[in-house]
Structure formats: C-alpha cells, structure tokens
Length: 153
Image (tube, rainbow, N blue to C red; front, top):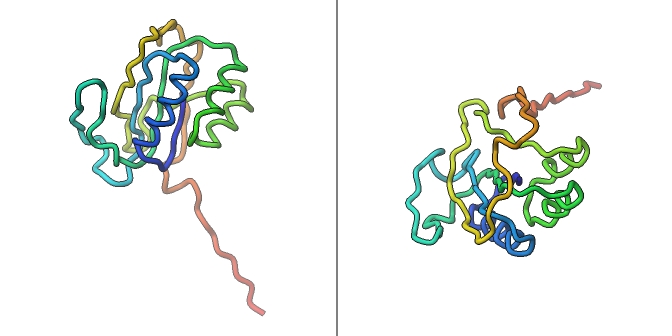
C-alpha cells in the first residue's frame, strides 16, 4: 500500500509501474483522496489497456495491491517507491504496520481512479486483512492552526 500527497497522477503511475515491474506485484488499484486542480470525484474517461487520458490530475492518492510479503520486504518496496509520503512511511515503520484510510475525511471520500494491470495474480484478498482500525482525524482546516505571539516592549 502507498500514500502520495500533492503530486500528479502521472508521477504516481510512473513510480508504481517501476515498483510493480521490479517486485513482480499484482494489479495496483489507485484511489484519489484529494485533488487540487479539478473537481473532486470527477469521473475520468479511460483509454484501452489501462491508460488514463487525464494524467494531469494533481492531489493526494493512495494505492493498494494484494500480495503477501515479509515485513522487511514491505518496508523495502515502500521505501523504494519514489514520491511516497514521508510521514506515511515513517509512521508505518514506527508502528510496525502501514494503514490507509478507506473512509471519508471531512467531505472527502476516496474514489477509485485507475487500476494498473499485471500478469501477476494477487495472492491475498481484502478479506484476509487482519486489522481494521477506525481513526478519528482532524479535518484539514484544523490540523495546523497558527497562533502569532508578539511581545511589546
């Protein structure tokens, strides 16, 4: 699983194609979690063979593939992925598990946007996941409030 923030769909796909080829990964499913240059959740037309017509979409994306790997190999794959969110990687290694949101955040809900095909079949199913956690997170506007403090002399 991967998390990308503030990047283009084109860069996400290029990065994941490289990792998919090197590590023989099954199909990778990409979801849009936030957009910065088009209406969020816009339906995109697709070209044959899994090629996306509009690669200029920028924003946040998450991606999944269903392959069982040893923990150290998971760390290697995610670390090798260009553009992956540093906080996603850091906290995943620290907690010894990677997590991705599947529920809405504020008024933003993840939307499927593309599946990268593969000749490799998945070897696990979403039903095989051992842990589901419900997180409560602050909406974007409340994350980093700034308070300016001044001193009069």
